[in-house]
Length: 435
Image (cartoon, rainbow, N blue to C red; front, top):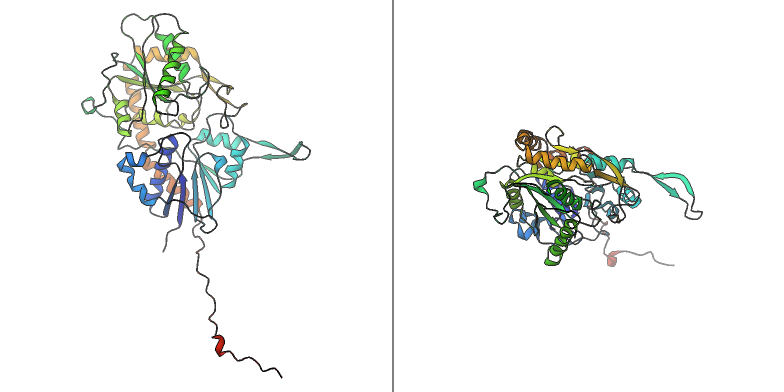
């Protein structure tokens, strides 16, 4: 019996969060061995290509890649797009939209329209699911520009499919097995921040890196004796000398707003392989990860860092709460505030809200983890175990298989060649004689 065709359009060959998400889902679907999988590569913003060539363990995906297809002639049994919802198009007999979701409390109406074009949708976190299921938009009459009394809402089923960790890559390793060199950093205690430092004034960029830097300066300024340092593994969406200098300029600008003797902040740019990221997480100088994020669709680096069995400090709102156990991690209180105009774009819509962590709590968490580090070691180990048991890639694959089995059609119509009846040779046909 032939397998149902399963076409997936996604940025699997890019260095991006969506690229990592795509590779994990594609591998899970291939490993289920139920479908004839075909991959269509797509770009993701300004992120670079070539991940597959640079990472031989993923080279097998090339065997499933196709350059494209004519939707007028080929109709996949199952069609999936892994991207933002406004790009969703139903090109198969059964259509699945997969998106990381949303970092704030709302979205553009075009996203709901895109979700409703599909038969089923997947998001990475319960936060995203709750937002999408809760938004509603008044439908306006095109002629009168008045409300029709009807609303646009999500009307298709949605499932949370978490982003599973690769336990073969992300794990605790001993210092003797780490080759990553951080000898230029003199401090022995580093708080690590990982993420894109994108648009937005200080306190308003989505990862809240600007305010993280400022809070770190304020917390440890004029300290006597040894102090910790802050290590930023960041980019602004590009990987070149110009973008690196732009990030350094941001740090210098923030530094000028804080008076006194300040602790050091280091910047690390450039792409690291997954194994190198795991070495960074496990490096003996890296003691904890900090994320004062405004909002996450999931928060993958936080999850992967937890497997190093080190403490995590994070905002107590949005997607990361699915996997950060409040008993084992430091989750900051705060309040919701409007997305600032400096951060708003076509995805982060004005009028929606996201998280503002409490500023005194930010400083307190820095001080406590630094001065009472031993108190956080056992809970961090428990958090690492919690991830291993509940959020592995294998667990995610099982969830993907269950959702597909229970929600997609059991059988698909088969395409057969049209068979015409055989006609007699015209020369043998006897025509009636006309009198």
